[in-house]
Length: 64
Image (cartoon, rainbow, N blue to C red):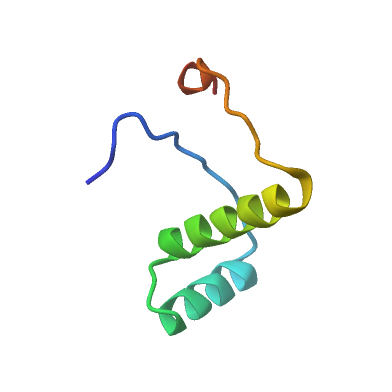
């Protein structure tokens, strides 16, 4: 179920990249959306390990 506080992120990708994303997602037991979320979380985790924790402003949910 979608959380009403979550932000929507729409992106355009080439058909070949789209296919490959879903291929990898299926291989790893995720949906395409789940794979994208996994990759974003991994990117943030790696960034914060190197650069330090990112402080999220109190009003972040109001920003687009």
